[in-house]
Length: 422
Image 1: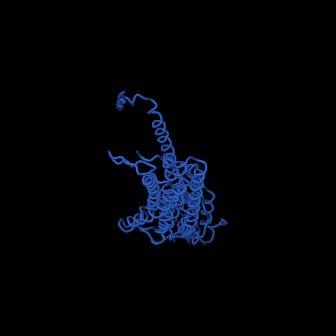
Image 2: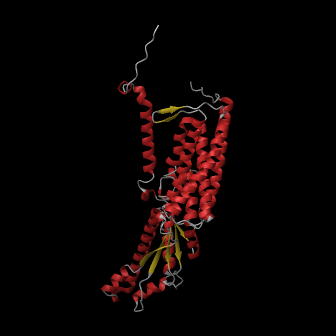
Image 3: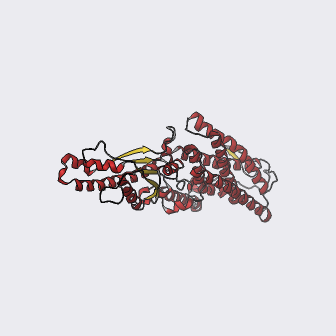
């Protein structure tokens, strides 16, 4: 008895099946919703979210207090600025000039407001014929903390300096009284010149403080993509996944191997392949494109360890979650990592949810280390020491989690053997 073959399905026929639409529609919609909320939620209004941006206030004025006042003008300005949080946006730190420079050089502050020596004498001279120059207050920026962070700090310090100038001007105008002519009154109304200077310079080929972020992103992508490519390639080579290129479809004979040994193989290959990918990243950025980078040998070692930690994490997640692993690792290393990295927008200027994520999200930890190496002379207190610790913790967690899950599956789950191709 002959049997007729089932008719071949067509796209128009399958499109009428609602069950075919359900899963991709729900997953795609959820992904679009989550990506929109997570990415845009961290950048919509950084000025409104800004809280306690660390900025130094330095008083170098040692002049005698004006008549009838207990403190000189520098001390008054420093005290007024330190007490004024600018609506909670600024976290003022009263420091000496040496302390402020040290924290600028280590990236612990975003800028500084400096009242120079002789400030009181210069201001007092404005009401006399001894005035030779307009008093100045200096705003120091820190471009190594990123263009936006440095700009926010500059705005806050400049506004504070102008408020101080206005307060001093009202006092001078009142003390001068009718003796001051129209020109003198105009000068006394805003007597202080606010000068902006770079407190900690970075190289011209540093992307205005953004090369650290993009270099970190390259390391994360190298680890993420490399881990997934290796995982898929190994599964295909061992016969546990189909290999389809264009119209060609093949499946290799299945190699009998358990999940733990498969994960070990993938992690060892990740260690080798990452050596190549990170070397090419460094070569492309520093040699070919001319990115400013000091401590190049250290940067290479750090780049390898950082990308390897990501790659091992990807392998562990893929081993634990199977087909969903790539999606899970994308959220862990990229989707949640970008808005909580503090690289483009300071963590003090993002909502609290992202500040919480920044304590453990890999991109923030890796970015701090890259920034310290590129801009802050590889100082440990600039974030490099913490970055090394977090890389070590991340690597250990990846190994423990990955092998614990595969050992459990090997002991309790079904055997990882697929049927041989017919």
